[in-house]
Image 1: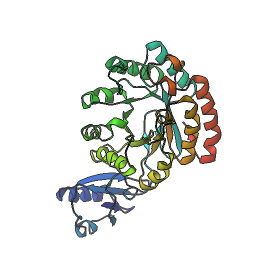
Image 2: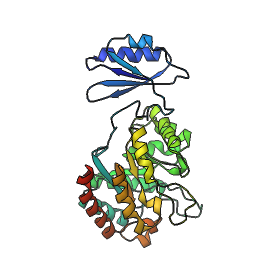
Image 3: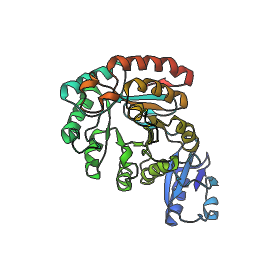
Image 4: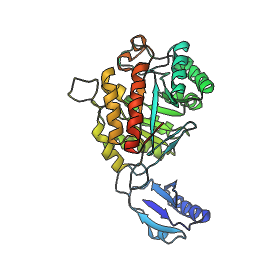
Amino acid sequence: MLVVMGREATEEDIKRVVQAIEARGLAPHLMPGPTRTAIGITGNTEAVESSGLRSLPGVRDLIRVTKPYKLASREMRIDDSTIKLPQTTIGPKNFTIIAGPCSVEDEKTMHKISEYLVERGIRILRAGAFKPRTSPYSFQGKEHSGLKLLEELKKEYGLGITTELMDSTHAEALEEVADLIQIGTRNMQNFTLLKRVGQLNTPVLLKRGMSATLEEWLMAAEYILSGGNMQVAMCERGIRTFADHNRNTLDISVIPPLKRQSHLPVIVDPSHATGYRPYVKPMALASMAAGADGIIVEIHPQPEQASSDGAQSLNFEEFDDLLKFFQKMGPIFGKTID
């Protein structure tokens, strides 16, 4: 259920409603808006008795939420939500570009990439310190030393950091460094991990599971939101189908229904979706046209020498070309390129 407060509602009115919800053994979730505050209610296994709430001062309306994902639902929050990072804002008016290598590389390469991004106005660096790999013999990332290097780059260049959390035991270490914590496709339904990031104050980039439906993806987001972390961005990174012409099938068609059913921003990962450098640019451009709020893309000065996923990483020249197209397309779709 959603309690909609009137424009005239005072802080005391809101506090009284919160106390009434808690007295019923339920969880209130404050959702401040530009003109009024709404309070979401979760934790109920049956219909909430509404007469007592409706009669409280400042309450304008009570709305029942029919979706199983309550806090992620557009029914709960009509306006698009935004994620405010120290470096930028992810949301409906911006088209946020997150770029960097698949994994943290040597210090010289990471400084070269960071300098390049800053020169082009890119504010968020992506790079995995801990890497989930299909083969136990593949490069697993630089782990804690990689995290330390990301922290140094953040301080020197002022870049925001996006990196993947694979294990709850690393949550505190990542929270100290990352501005946006990524949950990978393999962990989309790792509910213990989702509950843990729900307790953090750091925004989360939730990748879609490779076989997940839209509802399953949103239910995964609900785990994080219900834990108190309301800053979640959805990330479409391709799903597994019978097709063998790409690494995965980038489900561009999921963006409009996702936007219709949820207020959460959506980022697209064309690199992991296609797995092949020449396909990244057209899929990135298609993402903007479909309504995405940004992309996360892999780049490398010499992709053929990358520690991981070089085949899907753009070189600097290719990334420059992509940026030029975004600058042309942005005004058409009402987006500021960030």
